[in-house]
Figure 1: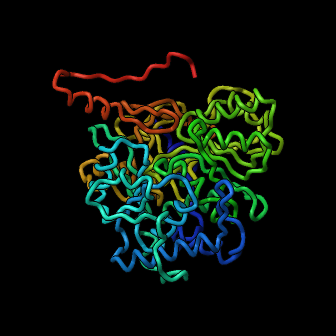
Figure 2 (figure 1 turned 60 degrees about the horizontal axis):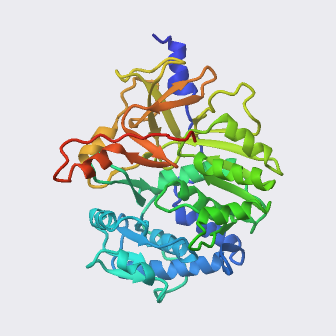
Length: 467
């Protein structure tokens, strides 16, 4: 159904082009370069606590040397069960510097889920704090970083491993009832962060880079955490309380018109932010607002631009945890005059995005199809799940011309617009998203089915109040 010219457009012309990026670098190496450029610049603030780049790096180095002394090596998975704090930042960097990969564990998760994740990852130890130690399953070695930070040299350890080593494993909902660990390598994340660094401009050195309010178990946080650190910006961690969430504190900061280079959030959170700005008669001073994890509406784009006191750029990111955070993006500084649906954009550098029908053949413009992602961004596999890995990561079914041999089947229904950008339509399976979090309805069904009096279950989502 497609001419040779149309095939060239959808397979190559509208895809990400090959381009230079730090292909020999790792995530922590990018941060070390920033440390060397300004060790005295403020890196992380949390209330009245303030750590410079040099202090964060020194803590991370001490932990890295300690972990190597324990025999931690590349591709070892180390659990991290910490609240958002300067210690969390130094811990993640320390694990990466040791050559290992981190497995973020949300302390708010149910005990059974935490136990499953730590056991499934086969983590030799978990780094946590005194007040969260009881969340770690019994029998697992642990390091309490708030009690006594590990001793060791404060110099950068000799680099080990390569960009092809694992950086982190994030567990997402699984349709069988078991969460699945997505194993990401440095190379894909570095390519993504490099693209962000080129397209999301930083403010003055030492200025507020971003506000870290989301859980590190959500890959949206990967951008909010590491991008400011490789740009030499300040990462602000809001102070929470019994009646005050991290996002509440972030909204209060934003409503003071504090200059912020970058804010990444789900459209659900951005709706709440826009409502607060409008109710308070306040304005924000955010250079780049990045939406991800859910569908972004033109109406929300307009509200965010109308409440800005500066020249704000809105970025709509699309991708998957399996694709190193995001693979397709669009940037705008003005509302779409035609309304309709906000475009997902096109594939970023060194990544590809395809739309195919149920025969895995390229879909023409305007015809809904399944989204496939490719390029160096793809995860290595699902941890210890070879069957699921073979199902979702397959050889590229498309005939040449196309540059990548392997693709990930997202399960998203999308279509090409005439201008070569992608538009999101919905899902082809039972996965839903709530505030950006992926939830497999089958996981809830599997849990309900364990009850002895329940034979069959069906779970669906319902929107009683629009929005």
